[in-house]
Image 1 (cartoon, one colour):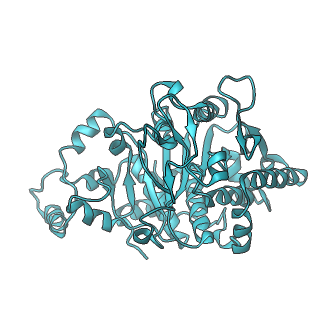
Image 2: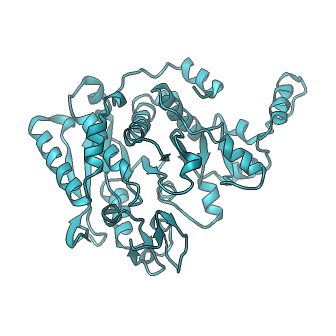
Image 3: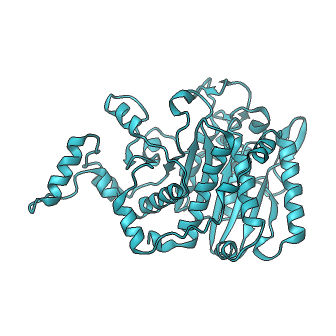
Length: 406
């Protein structure tokens, strides 16, 4: 098992350990069921999911009923539709839980068309919460209203390609991609996930504008946002069989930025020895390293609690020691801030590049908890388990037991 953050663990343990309630039992993931759902094309997947949900409602009641909600066009006049396989198709969200709950959570899957497996995660997330009602599930669903979008990009899911948007807001899923090796800004086209924060609404495209309006104004305002991704492109050899990676989206205040910018990153053993010496020195200085400053930051405590809950479920967590080594050599991701070996901070990094991804867009519009996960090259059922483990952890930490980070 990978090393945990002992200080955070001790603080969490002091306030009460997370119960191993298995609101979502990842061990119930059936390989054959995963394969059957992952092989469906977009129209078949959507039709089968809607049929399944409608049948559930015949037997379920209370918070265990689901509501199938088509996303409206941002003009508010009709449902948003796209041509998929020659037919107009709606984008559906599925809402579950207490309609009057103050807390609202959004789960988005298949942001990029080629990342197909987490639409199955979305289906199994709904199935796990809605089938076989229990008091523990009811306790969770009483506190939160959840909107699940199983497929963000229908055309991309149908074609197995990413969506790209040009400066006029026109979108395509045609090859600016070769075997999922995409080229950023190729002839002016940008990844659809990277244009969410464009200042000019018309430059985002109708689909993104409709989805943003839906989550912020129709379903929302929302408190929690989760985006599930998978790495299905080069360098899959580097990331093969890695655990789930957590990407945290958070923007610091000007005061926090000023303080963090004066601190060092903890890269080497020498840095760690220096920290230990300072701890026992009665004339010790103030905080010296970024990691030390962030450990008890509320947003990072929440994210660390989620990460550790995923580990408690027996799942591996991505270890970014390789990235740290590459950064020391002047290569690699070059993320500004890293917490421990398994929590990466993306907001400030992308902001410097002038990019606002979907989670960053929602954070800048008032969402307090926004995280992305990446799963890597391994069996489909394992990737679904990782996605479900992440969502179960968010429910445990953000909804059920808020005392873990307050």
